Amino acid sequence: MELTYRGVRFGEYCSDEEIFADLKEFSLPMCVVEVASIVLGCIIYGVLHGLGTAERRRLLIERLCQLGHDKFAVDIESESDAA
Image (cartoon, rainbow, N blue to C red; front, side, top):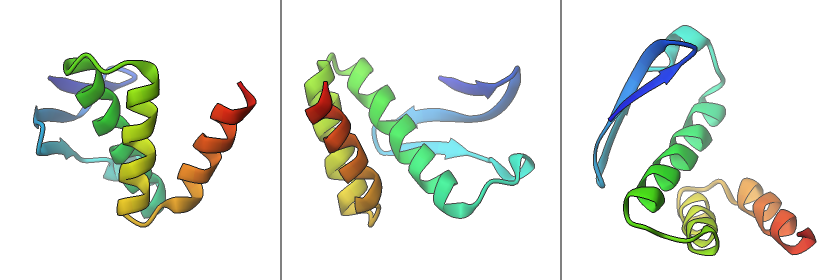
């Protein structure tokens, strides 16, 4: 599955264990690239495996915490509580 942004290919989903993304041309901070990659990977994985919204959200929070981005996981949890 190819990943594009505004018609520009920046990567691909290879398998459950591998996503390739080259975001250099967008000049994003590394933290943004890391979080975006985690979010994108979780969305693709969740959709391809038929996970519901709550399951995808749990997966995303778990992965963000595992990879040291707890701050963003807290934001997702509080957003979920407000809904």
